[in-house]
Image 1 (cartoon, helix red, strand yellow):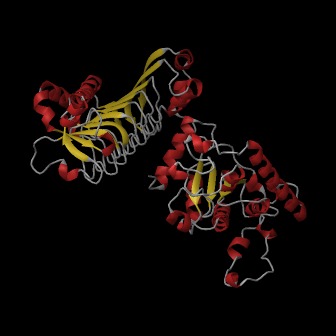
Image 2 (image 1 turned 45 degrees about the vertical axis):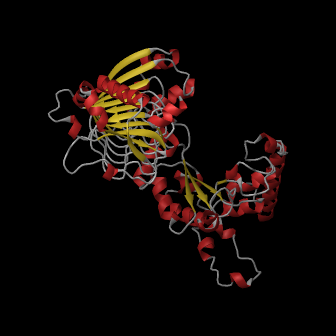
Image 3 (image 1 turned 90 degrees about the horizontal axis):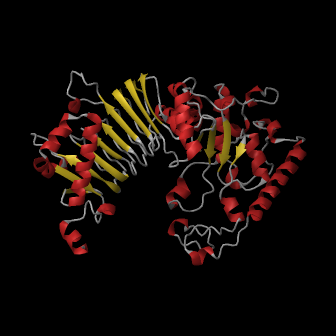
Length: 510
């Protein structure tokens, strides 16, 4: 779901916000043109670029992916290293490579082509007992490596010492190869493609292979300034740092206190609240904090407002917000509403941008107004109420509840495999919900159960109390008239839930 370098840059920014000391790694599949992409990733402030080759893998992927995805790591690594050097970006990132590395010789070869770090996956699994049965996804691993079945897990005979011994032998072989070249550490040969030469052992299948692309990398034998890597990238001064500099905020986090604040915000303030969430999670975990931070922001919030929020964090924006509001939200509550004296009808205005609630795993989100496209994409447990959405609402949703009190765009519910959505269909010429729902997975039905009605009404009541929505108040005041106008989107996984089960099924179960 990263469709542009701008989206990726924002995600990297968000991750640097929540954990400013952690390095952000971006994995790129080895293929033609990877160097151009890597240059963009480096400019987006990634700390590590991982070049992944077509070899390796546990066998849990589809056969077409195993056989046809990507190219050799050697070609991808050489292109990335060269592209970053020529664009003066090499010292900004650490290069990591993986994709079927097995020996110390592989490590040295990768280092000569520009790699700083080396990833071992399949071979490490084999060292601890994997036999590459390629049925990892079936829960039936015959040697007990990737299964939850107790009778199969008893067959697992691997030990940590096996893996430790393997990597010791890899390191020893790498040391021997380095000694033959006359060097004492990998850092001395990183990027030294001038030490590479073709083997004098012609094979028929390689006679047409031109390896100049790999060998003719920029000569860095004497110029090693690029290898003085920069520290973990920073987002610079941010609003969260100002908030965390407030002794009352610090005390609330440390001592589980409750605190209310009012803060101005503008659209250059991105991922606001993410660093606060990171601080809370680092000290108390996802659920261990019993305090409360209730912060009201006035203005236009930048992208990723409230990202990664946890329980106890309540953010209110009086104004509007950009894309990715509540990205990765885990708990707490986020409210976006226009000023009380707004000269427009909030139910007809867009107050939050695209891709809100992306990958949210909990919490509640209320917006008095319409949302942009891809609302609640990949939402897996959050609850939300808005007054309209753009295209692709609830796309790939796997859990949670979404209530829309207005018009939706096309393709709603595409790939929705979990959770429930309630969509209001008011009488208006030329508009009907059915024509805008993707029927491939979800089923449309009216709200027929008492539990479903209680869930829907309860969320609208909470939404009205939080936002002061006139539309919600109108619906609640004439509840018996409005309830039959709601459609419920039900994926197969929710068909037997108390909220969605048909009346007959529920009665039979009783």
